[in-house]
Length: 380
Ligand SMILES: Nc1ncnc2c1ncn2[C@@H]1O[C@H](COP(=O)(O)OP(=O)(O)O)[C@@H](O)[C@H]1O
Ligand SMILES: N[C@@H](CCC(=O)OP(=O)(O)O)C(=O)O
Image 1 (cartoon, rainbow, N blue to C red):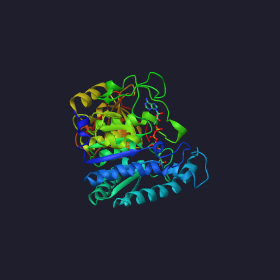
Image 2 (image 1 turned 90 degrees about the vertical axis):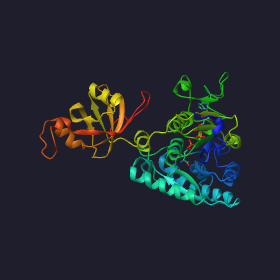
Image 3 (image 1 turned 135 degrees about the vertical axis):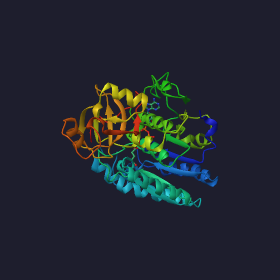
Image 4 (image 1 turned 60 degrees about the horizontal axis):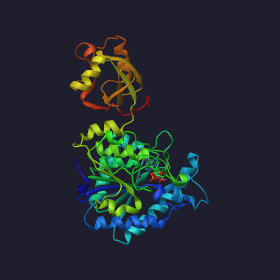
């Protein structure tokens, strides 16, 4: 089990800052808040640490130049603000890191860049190269091309996936609240949660919508989900206030510390469970559920009862039980059309043995869901 004592020793660190921590009361970018963060991160770089910054704030930075009083509600307005704001945000980061002799590199990612395996490797290669060269990658969602269907929305999940992507040994989520509270942080009687060791410590914790002025998008629920994802991938997480960033990164007793799971799952399995969007659903019978869950056996054609979606060989699919409960995500070894034909008893001539024994999902290509995990509600 990891502990707060490991925070100060981390070498490869992903720091995420939310819009709410980069903006003033009016919801517009406050450059001084950005400068204060850069000062803290530059000190880490000076100590030889590799830092990846995931920064929100593009939409907020675009408000003033466009004469907008608040974050636009429609997507195209948000995209226009982000298009203007992202350049301004990077200019400020470039100038401020430059004061310490540090170069920054802009990395804009869409959900597709993480969910598609070839893009995932490409993004990883670029990030690693930037870090090798001593450049601080500044990551944001590529808001200008992200649509409602294909977007992270908040940057918390993106930060957790980037942390796994680069093999970080610490993820720090900075927000406008001191810690995760067990209820509304402004309500009487709510208290900060110092440590989360596992799902049991999250039982009964209430999270509400984003806070002040509505500049943030994900709220605390997105942060807890992201922290749980990263911790499950073996990466400890500190959730703290941006104004306590220095203390949080030094391992001080501030914010909420999420202990990492003892072991990192294999990278392929993490990607399957958290980064992919399923292309379909395969319903399996009770015996196959048991085979997959308890004996890590492959899914054979004979154990399949229903098929939904248009997936090809190699696409991610969700395996569900007879009542639609999520069992696992796996990579299909049969295309949807072929599988439907096999289930209908259409003879296949180009494979060995009886069709009931055809592998639908291989044993090594399966990431089991914990009982509380959410999976996509249907094929993409
Ligand atoms: N249980 C909770 N503990 C802490 N903060 C909470 C909780 N529930 C809701 N919040 C709200 O979540 C907000 C942070 O989310 P958000 O505004 O999306 O921040 P960011 O812009 O940093 O991503 C806080 O300002 C707080 O009001
Ligand atoms: N990509 C968006 C981030 C959206 C957002 O507000 O995220 P967050 O503050 O992390 O909840 C932007 O740069 O404006």
